[in-house]
Length: 220
Image 1 (cartoon, helix red, strand yellow):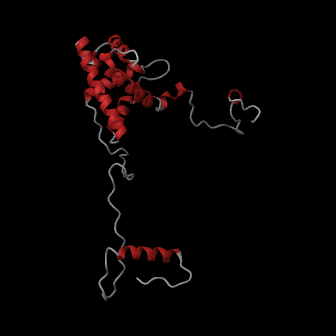
Image 2 (cartoon, rainbow, N blue to C red):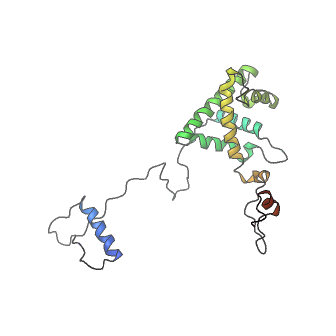
Image 3 (cartoon, rainbow, N blue to C red):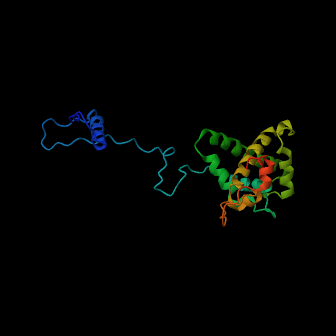
């Protein structure tokens, strides 16, 4: 491919020249072949299944969920103990918190894998301790019995030395539980979040009490 002549170089000519130059290093045209055309640039590398998701398909998350049915039942029982259904909103299991925790812990990233080890190990510990104390897995014992177990591990600072593993698990689990719960639209009212609500007429501006609380009444 001959370089462009000196003078004005259009964008189309520049791109054509660069593409042809890049391809020349990998595929050489047959010398003197009649009707020879410039080779195409080398193809881009294949799509990475995690870091380059295929948005033409409906599946956004390419990883498989790892929790077993037993782990999901235990997750739902503990999540509903932390966030039960009441006058303020639905139970955690009703807004998909167990699935959220499963999705989070199954993701193929270092932070998520570490969370998965803590949570899945903690779920196994919880069932083992439940069997030891009550003779049944955690999801089969009654709510008062679940509360007894949760009270033992709800605070790492006061947990007994032999229960520190359970306390560390409960701390991580509670964080994930709250994160999944309060990102669901059905729970936003508890936070005072009303979403994108249209305002009729001119924009009234921020509430006066908020301006005074921030000490901006002389600015606004």
